[in-house]
Every structure is written in C-alpha cells, then in structure tokens.
Length: 169
Image (cartoon, rainbow, N blue to C red; front, side):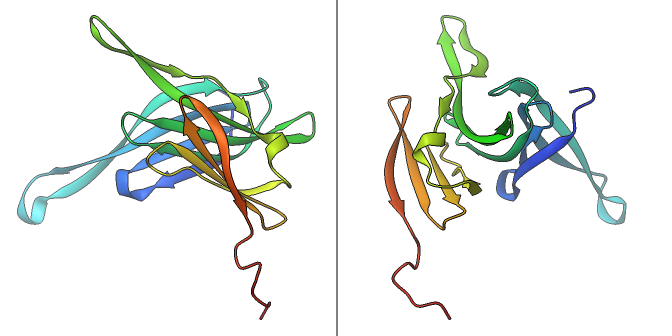
C-alpha cells in the first residue's frame, strides 16, 4: 500500500512465498515466481513477484510487528502481532474461499480471533505450518502455546516450556 513500510515478513523457501505485514496494519502474500529462458550457455533464470494484495487486520493503521502464514492450498492462516495503542495483540484469521455454482469464489478474510489473553507473555516467535491449521506461539517467558483450528475456531491444545526439566549449561 502507498506510504506503508513492510515491518514483518515470513518467507517459505519451499514454495517461494513471502507473507508480509505493514506499518499501516495490513498483511498480504507475495509469490516469487521463477522461469528459465534460453538454452545452453544462453540460459537465464528470471524472477518475478505476484502479490495477492493487502488485507486490513486488527486496528486500522496500527503496525504489524510479527507475522506467520501457512498455506496448504485449501487452508490459509495468518497470525500477527500488532501494536495497538502501545500494547501488543495476537490476532489470527483464516483466508476463506467460498464455492458457488460458478466455481471457486474470491478469497476473503475469515473471522479474526484475538488470542492475546491466552498467552502468558509477549510473543517472540510465531510459527504457522504449511498445513494452515495451527499456530505455535513462543513468548518471552519461554512458554510455547499451541493452537489448533477446529471447525473454524482456534482452540488452545497445549502449553509447554521446552527443556524446562533440564539444567542450564
């Protein structure tokens, strides 16, 4: 979007996809496309980018600080940390594509869920697997929270502290 800066990225090298968040509170996906041209010594690889456009998230104009994105083709899920009035918010939403008699419809933003109250501390890392059906959130206390998308709603399945039972080196 005009005047906005990219403030968060999540790049998946396996499928050449980059999710981004902006200073104006929007998110989107850019597919990086590669094509070979020519043959033999004259062959070249050319890259191009195709954007899905931008989607407003949370409070309009509030910057996105962190982003996670998973896309299995049929399941697409965003997780973002957004700074709203000086406080962080953890927001998660799917992208949905409705079917009609004419085939697949436009991809649209699904219901946004605020998971802030279910996290012990400020998030430091978001992971959304390529299955697009869950979110892992690591917070500043070292706790990892696992949320799973079930019937269109995110439910907290597990919370744990990796290596909590081991001594520090």
